[in-house]
Length: 111
Length: 116
Image (cartoon, rainbow over all chains, first blue to last red; front, top):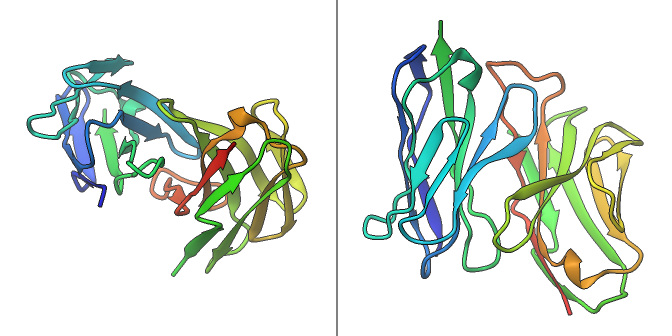
């Protein structure tokens, strides 16, 4: 069945460090892929998405490229800020018409 | 441990029919509760959230409504479904207040709704 494996946290970085959060998935065909973010005390928000192979989603300095050959959608940011501290969820669109959420990766950025 | 239930898992309904989706949480008290919808190819959209019994906030105007008759029960309803209501509906909860150490939002298994 459809599934997603996401890098386990917590991830603790210093400000301006480079961030990578790995995500790989198993799904039928080539589903749309999403990264969601949840800031402390808030609901889930869409961070970025890619709808087909080789697409690059980007937002707020974050990027993720849809790699069909490795079925991956790793999240990256070149220079993290304290305000990026949050929980990040990778979520492919499943073949059953639903979102398959990863377990989430908590990121803490220290000044 | 806490668990969250949603039912039904899948639902096919004709246009114009009513809707009732139920979400219940176990193992915690006084949670914040949320209803989200994911339409095909789109991001997740927050529909309603509730911080307590009878307290409902709506994020998007639509023909859906939500109610919270009990502390750990959250119901999504419609009097007349539209084709555009098709999608994946996700219930979620968080602890009251939240904190940087416990920001997690816990998700239910979801309900796939197809309106024909």
